[in-house]
Image 1 (tube, one colour):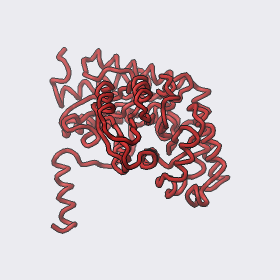
Image 2 (cartoon, one colour):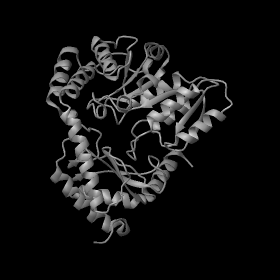
Image 3 (spheres, helix red, strand yellow):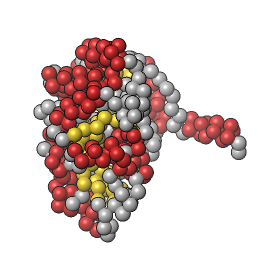
Length: 383
């Protein structure tokens, strides 16, 4: 079949299965974005970024190893390393590129990577592109992971790769148990803090801080386009690891550096996180409140207390219909379908942010309850 026939045929199949994606700008009350602290529109970030554009221009003009380096990048990297309690950090253009860089740089041929089955696609792709063997272990199953590591006959370095806060189910990894296991077995622990950085811990640096395992983590990957409100990602770790990434990470070396204004905006973001802890306190309180209200409405959600709340619908078309019904009522909630989640678990991924009020959340629960009754009546107990 010719390409101009094959591709439309495949698109039609996706549509029939309820898997066709469409681009849609934000509209309504935000319960979908990753702007958890509301920093994307914070006045200080906007002011600092606009000033930086006027001062340094729009583009960086090249990769960091050519003409794209700026003092603003080095400054925010030093500050972020201090924020994470590490020796160094390195700023990448995106979380995807950071994960690819880390996982194609450190694991070598003869090494083994152990990866949680629910890890994000960027982690999966990075592992696949590495030269190491990889073994998938059951989600958050420390006991099975320990057995797999001890039984592995490979003579090379072993790596354990996990998210600290999983992006689809909103549950936390048992980081303390992973750290103890890696210390015992000599495995290197790599942690993606994409959805935790800015939110957890006394200083807001993430779940590594909260669980006190920083000294047992090889490197962490910290997305800057979620709670930090800007764009890009930081890899944080010992100085030698950052030096090695600069030399060997292709996704860093062969990417045009981000606009310098982003680094300036991120400096402002770290300032706000340090000076306005009430934002993360409000976020955590709102997440608990919404979870309580959903349970009172007898809407099934996973246990936990994070800002990411999954409402599993099951069928793709039903999830899309439910999302559209809520959008019509003014709530920006999106349907998440395979391959982002396992087949048969299409869902609404509700993400709370610090800017939503209790009345907004109350109205959302009522609208969701009504929508669920229409799309899948068995999911809500009859009153």
